Length: 355
Ligand code: ASP
Image (cartoon, rainbow, N blue to C red; front, side, top):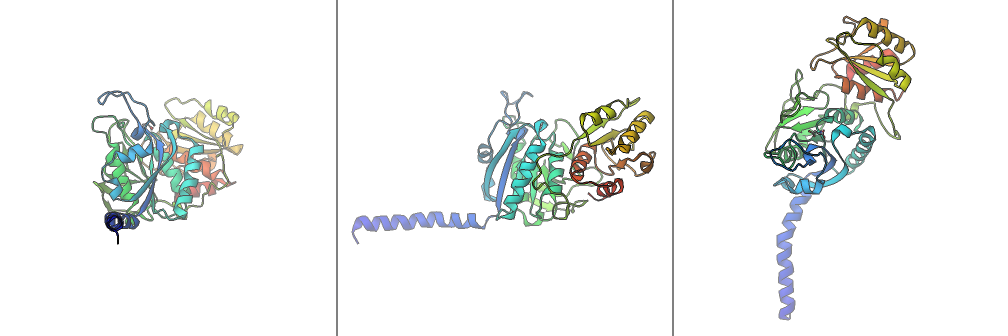
């Protein structure tokens, strides 16, 4: 062999020795796709200590590159589905997200992470919990501080979310939220505080587990039917029936109810006071709406607890449905999906008892 040829054979062998183990290790890692939608986790501001910033500025590839060692957890790639603050999250994006997740999980992808603003993250998580048709892990994460902030919480949240999505023990636990070292179920997670990093909490039902520097520990399975056991689907669906939320207060006026019916609402969720209560006048307006076939769900503006069936309000008499454990925003998600089909008041109530 000529010396030039010998050198090129030796160089090829050396390159193979360097890159083969890397590729083989990559093959063994679980495949995780990060679907990016925007939020503060992708937000940027002028100052690292100022409170002003804009959500949804940084692209997913840059976000992945900013997290040290994240590629050691999974064979990872990102897709940019949208780049909005989650105050602008829409049903259109939900449907796009759900269809993409179902497509990826039906293939060889082992888990999904969704980066998302925190304002409406619990609603997206709950929607996906009802629509994803797989028991493979789907994990939402976000941050309270933008990427440019001092002690930004996004990178570690994303690292932990990927660790959960890549963990075989995460299967069958429905859609989850991973933030601030905690794993919460889509059913139970609530945004409880406006700006601190411990924003998502799960009072009453507790945490599903913890994810600390990538170490995942589970304690529980979530409450309620979800994913593979859910009867809901958005196959071929482009829009959901309109459902609005009316906030209860002392001396509440009934006026909004007929106005919303006139505007085209098919359902109204009342964030009632206490145990899903409202003024006598609002109850009368609700009864009038239910007699016309509009679904009225009684939820509560109180952050924790169950709205009792036939508590102070006799639901059968007013034609109303109790949201049970669901807060008003999640009750709205369930009702929009439920209204894709004709259902009696009793059937609707059963949904609120089971999901
Ligand atoms: N407004 C932001 C959003 O929901 C807040 C956040 O991400 O924490 O996109």
